[in-house]
Amino acid sequence: MNDRDNLLQNAGINTRLTHIGNDPSDYFGFVNPPVVHASTVLFPNARTMETRSQKYTYGTRGTPTTDALCDAINALEGSAGTILVPTGLAAVTVPLLAFLSSGDHVLIVDSVYTPTRHFCDTMLTRLGVDVEYYDPAIGAGIEQLFKPNTKLVHTEAPGSNTFEMQDIPAIAAIAHKHGAVVAMDNTWATPVYFRPLDFGVDISIHAATKYPSGHSDILMGTVSANARHWEQLKEANITLGICGAPDDAYQILRGLRTMGVRLERHYESALTIAKWLEGREEVASVLHPALPSFPSHELWKRDFKGASGIFSFVLAAEAPEKFKAKAHAFLDALQVFGLGYSWGGFESLAVHVNLNDRRIRKAPQEGPVIRLQIGLEDVVDIKADIERGFAAANAV
Ligand SMILES: *Cc1c(COP(=O)(O)O)cnc(C)c1O
Image 1 (tube, protein in one colour):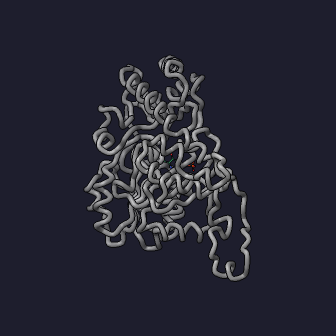
Image 2 (cartoon, protein in one colour):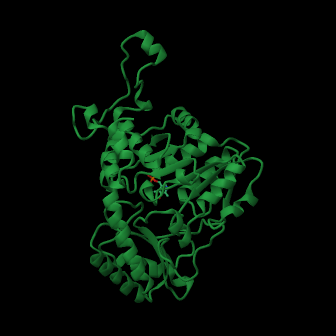
Image 3 (cartoon, helix red, strand yellow):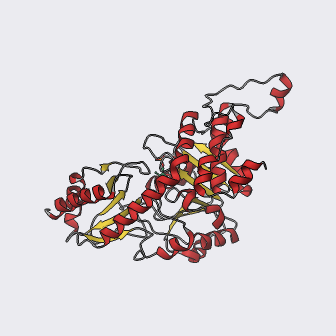
């Protein structure tokens, strides 16, 4: 380990985000790494080619650009290795394909990202994997769901759209007792606010599309493994031929440099707005893990260092027949918030959440669920926009 690595290992998170990944002295002092576009890499002679005994051998197996990003993610996650894939969804599906076989049983949290459920219910089921969903509040009680063929537990905390926390260390301990791999979709917290591998998780998954990108213009996923699971993950990555592109890798590394300061603002603004919403008569409840009123808040407080900018609230409505009309009136009145999927960019977004796919935790009865991504705009303008939404919803 050189002086620079040593310094960075003990430095604060923003110092690390600023300097991890590439070392400028490796490339003529340029601050950023080169964007290497590659399929073919040349070998100096037949012997080197035969034994593949040089650092880079083919574009799918890494370049100085993708290595810079993977090294940065490894530093943040504390992982043995990281693979890049073209989307966050591929970052979920590749490890499921890497560690599951026909005849295996897999446990998936019920508050999982909807496209993950779709993959499990269609392709994974078709390949002969027995898929079972569990309550995010299950904790150590997950042991009752284990079968002799349970091979993997896929967690996501907080859960998508409803933000339930999970007792990750308790679930990981039970899973390991039964020889199962633990994967976690850690997109919400980013490694800045939660490091899954420190809490017993084996595989940490990110939609780098969200906060690492930060600008709503890149799709990319990262999967990081501990030493025990790295070889199998890497092997699956190469076998499937699913790899990240150099321009995207460059942009994600660029995004990481400012992710810490962006997250601070997202965290602060979102929490301010969540607290403000709690006091509004138009709101039945606010689903944000950093609020003491939130049912699994204690787990967030125990394990997480912060909160990102996305949460939901239940817009109060008298009767289910009015849910959709009220939600649409609220959304259509917004001028600062955009109506769009995904999150983690600089701009505020709102969406009416559909929870019809839930098996265990059903949708709230008090009204429609609206998800807000709080962007980097000024809080006063965001509040004024939400006021516009409330006025329109009240008129329904
Ligand atoms: C957005 C998201 C993904 C998928 O990311 P894409 O790059 O859009 O495919 C996966 N997991 C979670 C929790 C997400 O929010």
